Length: 67
Image 1 (cartoon, one colour):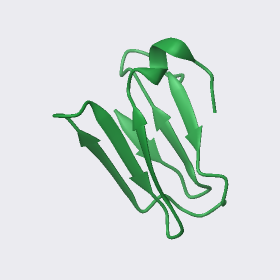
Image 2 (image 1 turned 120 degrees about the vertical axis):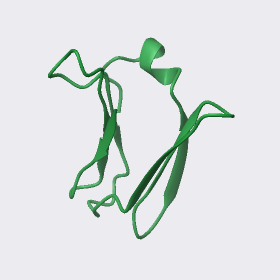
Image 3 (image 1 turned 30 degrees about the vertical axis):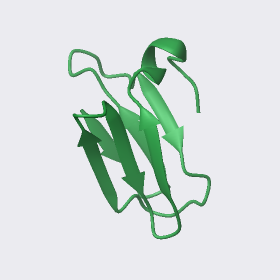
Image 4 (image 1 turned 180 degrees about the horizontal axis):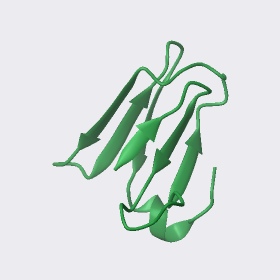
């Protein structure tokens, strides 16, 4: 599961844990407006009012606490 915050972060969770697996920051301190799992390409797309970020779910295994 993924959630977008009002301060511009995307948190990726395993529902079995209360701690996020990964936190991605948009760095503009703007609310996340859209968050989509692109299953065919195995990507996550997140957007605020300024930028769109496209990132791999595989980055979870590379950096559990990365930003």
